[in-house]
Every structure is written in structure tokens, then in C-alpha cells.
Image (cartoon, rainbow, N blue to C red; front, side, top):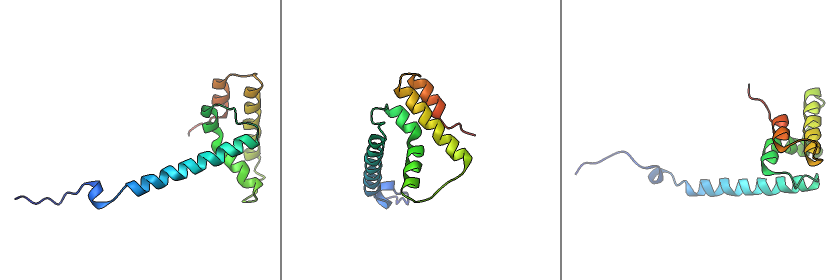
Length: 108
């Protein structure tokens, strides 16, 4: 009988607990973000737009919690830009696509 040293991933590492933890973390983060969007009056935003600004919103909350403070003019400009385009979308001044493109962070 031929012996093999190749093992499947499940033989050496049980991925189920890792996946369960990742799912729980994602659900917790989603719930927290939904609460934040609700507090900001942005709960009705489409998910596509929320996904584009979730990092910005989380950073705003972290700063409000006192985790850090920034006086960087580029960060302040970015925040103003996000707020402007979200409000413009909510007031019907621009389309969803325009708002998404306007807040999307360009990759280098």
C-alpha cells in the first residue's frame, strides 16, 4: 500500500472555527456601522454608498470617542467631501453613481 504525506487542509487545520469567528466579527461590525449610520441620519443610504464611506465613518467615530485627534487638513477636507456628497445625494442633487464616484478613494 502506498503511503502519502500529502494531507488535506481539513486534516491539518480545522477552518470551521476560523470562519465562524470571521462571520461573527463581520456581523458585529455590520451592526455597529448600521447604528452609526442611523445616529448620523444616514440609515437610508444604499449599501453601495455605505460601503464606500464605512472607513470614513468609522474614523469619525473613533475620533469622537477620543481614540485619536487629527488636525491634518487633508483628513478634514476628506470628511467635508464625504459629508457634502452624502447630503447632496440625500437631497436629490446628485445620483447614486455620482455620489459613489465622488467619495470613492482612488487607488494609486
